[in-house]
Length: 86
Image (tube, rainbow, N blue to C red; front, side, top):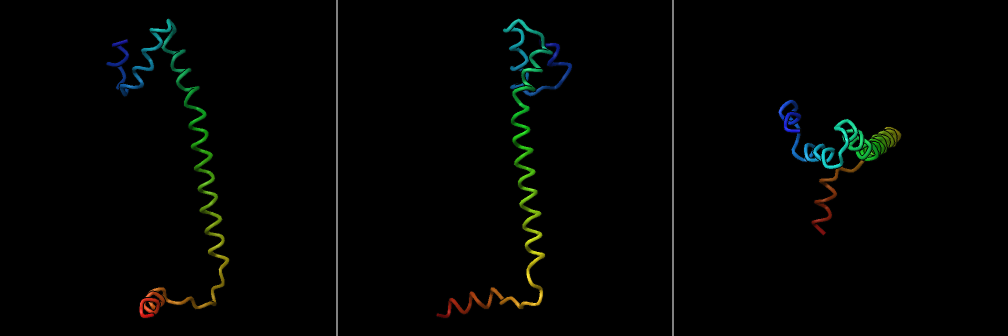
C-alpha cells in the first residue's frame, strides 16, 4: 500500500480508507468503488441544493424585472433620517 501513496498524492483520510481494503482482504479497486458509492448520494444532494439555489436566484431576478419601472421609490437614507428625527 505504501507504493500507492508514493505514486499518487492522496489525502491522509482517503489513504486510510483505501488501506481498509487490506484489512477487508479486498482489492483497492473494490474499495474505491465502495468509497464512490458512499460519496455519490452526497454529491447528488449537493447538486440538487445548487439547482434549487439557482432556481431561486432566477425567480428573484424575474420578480425584480416585473416591478413597475415608473414608480419613484423613496430614498432609504432620507427615510432613516426622518425616522431618527422622531
